[in-house]
Length: 255
Image 1: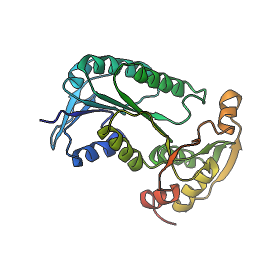
Image 2 (image 1 turned 135 degrees about the vertical axis):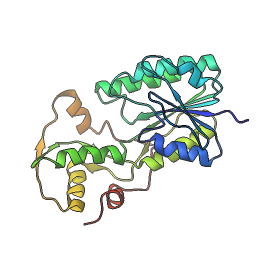
Image 3 (image 1 turned 90 degrees about the vertical axis):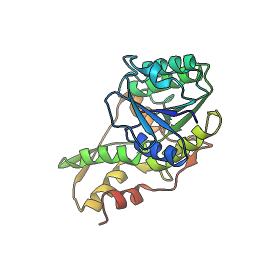
């Protein structure tokens, strides 16, 4: 019987796209999550917690490939260390990790932890692949919705984004997982770069809403990094095909 593919974060934004693609590729899937879920249709759910290091060895046992998609505002580096230690003990043959464009250039605590997680994967002794992606359309939409709920919308000055579709990231991850370890692969970003104000205006337009946009400065080293485009893709990037406008038309509606 073919060994299962273990997916951490399999019930999250990205995991909900990745798991069905793995199943359509004929792979058995095991999902590690902190809460019980019903298993079935070729997907087994096991309970464990990377940050508490509970249930991880049992989840990894027998898996030949691990897709590490789980993320949190804090502790991504320690969670990765727990996972790679378990993967090394279990003899996993391929560890695939999703990271973020700019983790080594934007001085945010979350990004720094994600970068340390990359380093843990690369130094684990387990054959590995790391893909850095831009922010997903879904996550950008959540942020824009929150901003648009205010009568005056604060817009970070100088901040640009290149959002990418989660479906396209999932397809790329599955292709990488089914292939051999490739190390750091080209980044994946959306087809267009947008000032945040344009992302907000696009959302307001499809919702038929009117709001005053108020540019606000982002101070310090973080603001400087964003103004310099440290969160944007560089040479060698792979770009997806689905634009922010196309995503909004499907998810939110048309004007």
